[in-house]
Amino acid sequence: MDYAVTKDIPNRKGEGSSKVGQSTFETQSCVDNVVYKLYFKGLVSGETATDKKTIVKVGFGVAICDEADNLFYGMNKSLNEAVINREEADILALITGLYESIHCGVKNVVICCDDRQIYQIIIGREKPQQKNVHLLEEVQRLRGRLASTGTVLVATRDDNFALRLAIDALVKATQEKPLTCSICSDKTDAEHMLLNDKCLHRHCFSCVKQQVKVKLRSGIVPPCLEDGCKSELTLESCSMVLTPKLIEMWKRKMEEDLIPDAEKIYCPYRSCSMLMSKTELSREAEQSNVRACIKCSELFCIDCKVPWHSDLSCADYKRIHSERLVNDVMLKVLANDQMWRQCSECKHMIELTEGCNHITCRCGYEFCYRCGHKWTKYHAYRCQLMDNDEDEEDYNLHVDAEVNNDDDGDDDEDYVFDEDYEEDDDDDDDDDGTTYSLEDFRREIS
Image: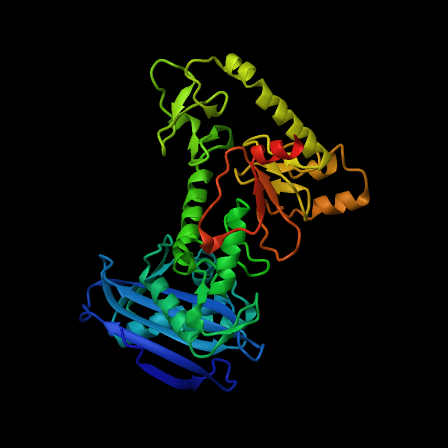
């Protein structure tokens, strides 16, 4: 497809002109007795240019298909406007599609709309915004020039021709001048900005990578960086800017999210620590509590959550290792003195250095740092240990504390104490936080 035509056209409201880029292609000749399907899509993206003024980028996509959904004609168009919204962009895309249908000699058209609100406006069940009334009148005028037209509501498809053409037009529209990342305020070329396909917000590669790194280490699916946006980032769209380690972390997070919290269990061997589901673990021999790790194949006790003690019952193992248990108790006393909190699900020890008391552990379990109980949206008002207005304000922040992460640039350290933790030798994304094992603390308190 050639990005062929660039010209000045009259502004649709008669105010100056807008820069427009357009590309078209046609695959075959029109047949009179065929009812063609007209797909259309208008996309809007607000971009901040280097002069700090917001310029709205608009992309149109139009696809005319035969009855078997084979593409007959396609075109896309982009323009810059000061004020335009999604409804207006969609109607303008439809007008463009009807005009191109007439220009190609198409006589019978079914308008395929994947937006319920726009569909209701087209068929007259909803009123358009006042400023778009004249656009809807133009739609009806163009429909009158066709032999027959109809309108149907269709499901949104990721492979929709019109949607892909509109996205392509929007991307090309943003390549005209450097943009300013709304997070770091650096001036960056559009090709070095990551586009979130769900919301069309753009941010520089560096900020996206940092967002993914921080959120994944907090056990959270990375959201869009734009303030107030509810969309989430996707691994597919971000993989080009991420290190192999971050990609692996994201894949592991996706796998973890498929396992219910009550089913999660970690391999107790420090060289592995694989997360598994209890139901997927196969039994070995005739023992009811022995399991094999699905990654390292080592045996462990699913009841004690320790390496397999083949000649000992769980009770005997705990009795023989009573010294270790005493040290564990001493560690818990130390943790209590230092006001650390242990996750009741995976047993990680956590120190909160800043933020509110709503903790999201790496295993996904959410709890109150103040009392240790499971977090609910009403917990802030029911926690028995909340004793002043400052605590209540702190709770109401609803900000997940960063666990085992020191990427915020302050001098505080976040600690995770894990009996079977192994240092990560990958320098690419090393965490500046400090991690100690139980053995370190046994030596410290002995």
